Image (cartoon, rainbow, N blue to C red; front, side, top):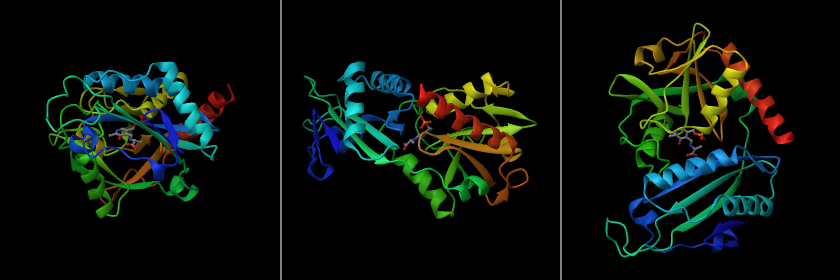
Length: 283
Ligand code: PDD
């Protein structure tokens, strides 16, 4: 069951206009929210990031916080699994094709769906994932969670074509930004390094959880620009996202990262993340 513009219906019955600006221009924003034991994880943080994205594209939020919470909880309730991931999508609505915003504005399209959340299998946690590095050729507003994802799609496909799980993005042949659909952390000499949240990367909700866990557990960490050379010289590399949580990256461009196995920082943060999730869900 999905939610579309005020109604719940089976996904097969859901339709939007071919003139929807999401379809025509990619003019919209989205969120992906994990749900554990039927509770949306970090919901208010995800809705705050949605507000940021909407503000950046000058689209008034069609719902206040309590309306969003009701929609989200209703979608969770109408879908079978205890663990789900929600996809929230807001576009500028359907209007005659013109690049400039419709004037007067039209009703935004609001779509929410749920999919089963599959946890990374034990083998993947033990082996880690393979990644490639690619040039970050996206625009300069990567802090907006925009539905216009063609660059990310092509970058992720480049990884898949190389037999890898993710592409690590290097801006200006110089520094690390993030993954095609994830944030990336570097570990060197026991210090967890994270790129700063600026307009060149998505401010990840999982990224924030990882840095909070580092802070509360006295794990040395630094948030700063990370040179390309530091990525290649890392003891460990970690990838985070709402659907993948935290994974170790064990090969980069076909070469082992560190000793080629998930390291101590990964093991520690993975465990802390699982404990944190359980604590939050219990509360
Ligand atoms: N993507 N960076 C990019 C470009 C992303 O697309 C994502 C997540 C992240 C991680 O953010 P978070 O921890 O809030 O999930 C970073 C989602 C999962 C997606 O598009 O499916």
